Amino acid sequence: MGNSLKKIQILLIEDNRLLRDGISAMLKKQSDMHVVATVGNGENILLMLGKHKPNIILLDLGLRNQNSLQIVKLTKLNFPEIKIIVMDLIPLQADVFQFVQEGVSGFILKDANIAEFFKTIRSVYHGLKILPPHLTGSLFSQIVEHAINVVKPSVISESVRMTKRERQVIELIADGSSNKEIAQKLHLSTYTVKSHVHNILEKLALNTRVQIAKHAHLTDYSKTEIDPTSLTDE
Image (tube, rainbow, N blue to C red):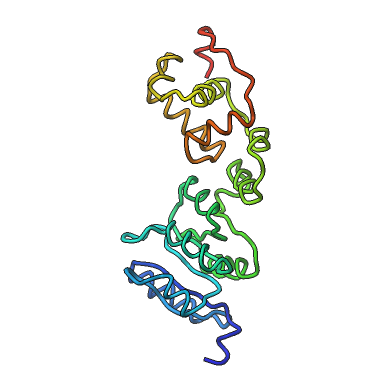
């Protein structure tokens, strides 16, 4: 045991056995890393954390029998100092945002090369936050930055350009309208409204309609008049 204490202590949570064994074998070859335990399914994560006190958890985002986000929440609640890196093929932006909001420090895409994999672990261990490469530099990562630094929504709205149509939809959501009502008022299909709502969510990276409504009240969008002639203006 002795000298393993100075190493990065890693707990691996992955329910695919081949991946679990493979990743574990790779980590063990690193002189500065030590795998304290690997977890497949059904183990009591909190018990494991208390027992092994890892510095870092490598967590598969797509666990079949356990909710990965729940594991993140529990860990951060009980062991806030443990850093979590999520592994996934191609995480959805909404997932990334949620996981970052709950305190995840890094993402490793499963198509990353081994050098990137180790680099992410070491960087996170030293206190950096590592987002998936296809998201950094995007508008989305800017919003995540805002979320990490907890800035008032009004600041976000200034960094995000809304189309006229999206502003109208935000107004109506803020007034409590359903997708169906919005569709009727704007003479759009509910499908189109849904896709506007989705785009607005992506732009604001807010999770629910409640938050859109709150956001609209906070930033107080200048009431956009709904003018039938502008309906073709997407």
